[in-house]
Image (cartoon, rainbow, N blue to C red):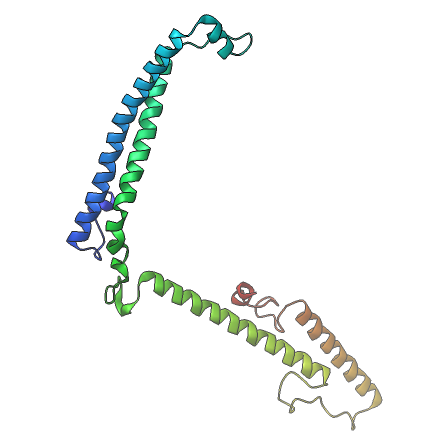
Length: 224
């Protein structure tokens, strides 16, 4: 069903009546222009045909292209003149009627902006609520990116300083003073291997555990 039969609640009865009057005036002017244009097109065709037939044959041949048949006015040209005249007249008069009455629609354009007239609870329109949710979502994604980059920077800094990733030993590696040389060498080898593995996974954008297949969560992927 057309929106004309179900106007919004923000329009008063006077606004609806004004809108209907403007619409009716535009349609009336369009049909009036169609009638005047069709008559004008047929009259123009008849006048041009009469003048053309009064011309001498030599003049007609000069007006035609070389090796071409002289122009003839037929029913097809008359129909074309009527159609073109009607289309132009309808467009011109409908456009003029709309421009002459557009000032009556100014209060209707401002109807939805009046204070106290809202389309939803909370003093906000649907568009304003959607915009607010989008802004909150964007802020959440920005904060999540900031925290993720901060975690990566902290872990990389702790690895470069020789600290562990947990606080079980106050963030330091175990003391090797009381161990044998072979145990110290083996422990250093495992430590360097762990550091290389962690650094490699961070550079590739993977997590430090296999709980999600070694990848960041889907929300982080969307944020990136």
